[in-house]
Image 1 (tube, rainbow, N blue to C red):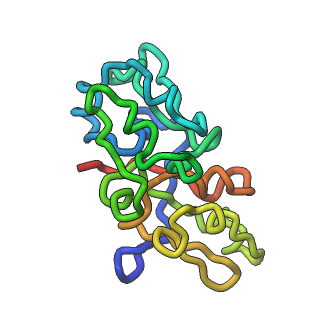
Image 2 (cartoon, rainbow, N blue to C red):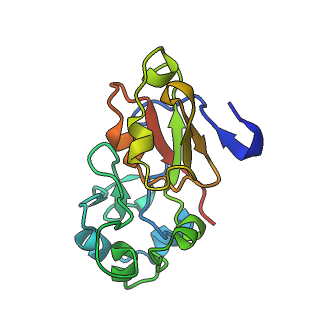
Length: 188
């Protein structure tokens, strides 16, 4: 469902473990084909992640992506290094190959260079759209008010142009199955 101004609140969510789905990549990742060819699988970004959100894809993963970094938001979200000292996102600073562009810990730069994915809300599952008030996803969003807003009953709305796909909303969702999921966003 698309709203005025490029915001949207829902579209059908793909099934878990969707075959052929592109993996969620770390902040600052180049477009998928370029990322997969430039990543040297050193896992420096995985080691640098203060929230341990990055993990290595298993060997034999589709598309020759084995050994490359990915995120599983239900296990750990990208916190955008919010509480970490320094001027740059740790994973982007650690990448020696250029597969991850250096990203400064500045809201404008994060919005311009981070495109992990976009949060999708399943209105049939979201408590706030079903006679309960929740708001856990909004309170977890590091870009609250920009990437996500809330209305009556704490009904969240995702601004697809500003959502970077950090996964804090998905990680915090109290509903099972989860009412909000991060899906891959095309990187440019």
